[in-house]
Image (tube, rainbow, N blue to C red; front, top):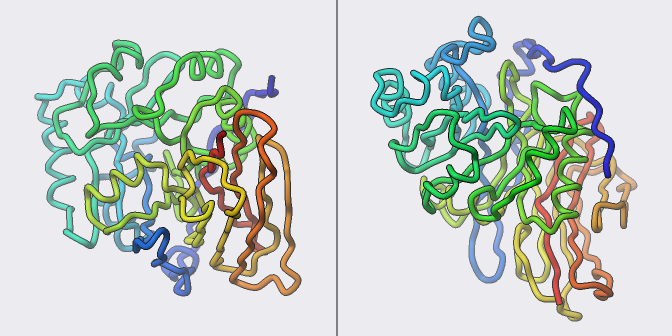
Length: 353
């Protein structure tokens, strides 16, 4: 069992140096690739942000206008989920005026092919807080019933992402006592407002994978955070449903800057479960925003291979053969660090008999 220590410090306040916020950091990031004869586009987003409607930090998170101006004009996101607490949205009443306002803010900021907001909120329930991301505007619900019952209610146009719940053993037990690969396809491995908690979150990820669960990885902000957290996804089109389905397919990675990352097995993407093929190799391609300091390939939760580019270039490619299967399955994912400390984490590839 992993060790989960309570966080001594919950939040780190945002860095507000203007030069850091307004200058694009990655004009060279690769945004197109071809896998399996199909073309994919890279999109950057955030699926965990709040406005002043959430009463945790109302004087810091800002209004809807503040949030949308930030994610569009400063962070230059392609998609977003504003996840105010259900309890602060008229206690989760879907016919309330405050939820109607949220729906209007989503629809009026939608720019076809340019910017895509989703209907979203944070559903706090005992030890299993989840963010709800949906194509539908009618799925706001109170914090009850339990998440397992909520999963029965939603269809394929909605999925959930667990909040940072690795702070106490009770949260760990509550989170991983149940799972649904389709209703909970993603997990945050990094939160901008809890940068000090990333070891706990990484331990939570490893524990979930050790149980055989399938979920991809993203990074998100939560409260207060600016310019640190990116949910990155490769999709056939930069359109609302295409990005949504690609998130569900786990074709994702998390990053703390606009880093480009491709990880595949033969012609299969990260996030997929594939049969072992002796002829195929794992392949990773990185386009950094600063020189790449170290790349680590993790196998079954433990370090397997590592690379330190001699020249610490912005671009790095590597092909490597996975080990032959001794057991039923192995999973591999990639984590990297740049010379400036920014990082990224790919979703796994599960190789099975």
